[in-house]
Image (cartoon, rainbow, N blue to C red):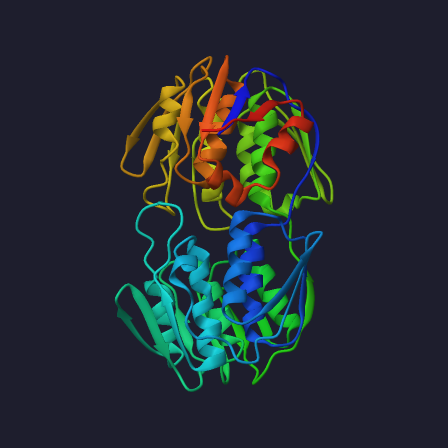
Length: 414
């Protein structure tokens, strides 16, 4: 449990960690080759530790020191992923494509993770079937078999990040060229494509598609993970919600354009350089409307923290969630802190209040937890946020970084 004494202005610089959502698929990409792959700028997070544990269970050797992962071995991979690990987080399902491509068959449990509403893996399975895999569901797990995957044209009804990554991973060892029409273009997906290119696959982005020409075998590579845009946005909001000034260093402003645009509309002052972004919070935010959307739109992972910020705005904000149907786990705890929010389907109507009050609240997922921490930083009095495992899954050294900015944050037993 995290204790927070609110009402203190945050000031200073914070160094942004490597992107969790880029690190996870990169770790699973190492299943495509027995040769050494070196990954740099890896954040020390529970989800990353789960990914490391999973590839070890499948036959890889791993050494992790000072943010650098060296992964090698696995000439003969285990084709069955331990269900207990896969069910910890949704991204673990990405081992399916590499296992089928390397071993010819795989058994992977249906994934777990944050409860954000229905997130079926249909796009993953339909895509792998197009590449020639025989896929069936049995006893809560997916079984897939293919002597050799074959490149094919795959159309995605929605630009799913996970499905695009799954097809890139599988296509890297498929015979011929795999073309994904309407792919996700999130920076983390592009980062995976860059890594696969270094390993020997040919990846090309077009106007409405991405193609990957597979190879019979891939080589080892070295790769540095991109900065975590969600962590950067969260700390910038921490400064803005406390009327402070925070600079996110080792960040990529280009990955945050839609988010920074809404911050400016809300009255924040934004400055940016090649690898940093700085935000000065307003005396009181102005209400703004936004909808989450695949990149380059407003990222769904920053919706809950942004709602916490707008809870203190002057006026009414309308927030439309188009990516995850049930990404509203932060609403009830924010109401306990004095926010005024109404839920209508996939729309939130946020009536800004002048102040929030400290409370005991519980995080139900990673980004809801971040929203509650932000609200607590701005609230009057003391708050306690339960749900440490969720925050530890997505934010490296959260308490330490907040304290360095001037926050009064501490850990307490539940």
